[in-house]
Length: 136
Image (cartoon, rainbow, N blue to C red; front, top):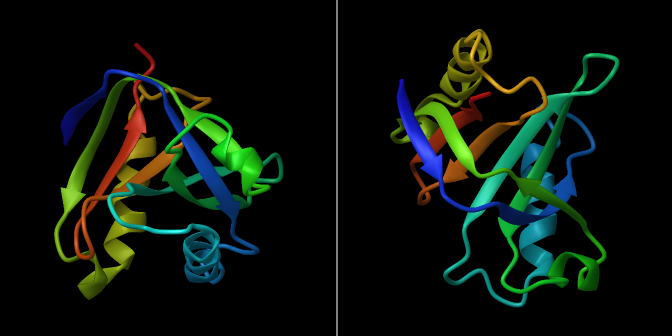
């Protein structure tokens, strides 16, 4: 695993999937449809368990300006700045299960922020950076 640093908080526009994992693609499609353009935008997937232990997944994109989430009538979540532990999975479409396996390893790390999210940062069409914020 590697350590990745976010120097600043990141404001995200979010669309919650109706279910996990089956609703993930639909959530991303809905988010893309809301945007005037996806050119130059950074996309994320964030997830965490709810009180019942069910995974809640949100397709997300960085806000381009303050208030954009509200304009689109979407939820806004802030990824906190700081250090994240994780890894990059190349060509993740060839074995999507490796994303879940990677997060199982990451959340077992005793250093993680218990109030943080599992974060997927889509580097491009094929590669995803999977990470969890460290509690340091």
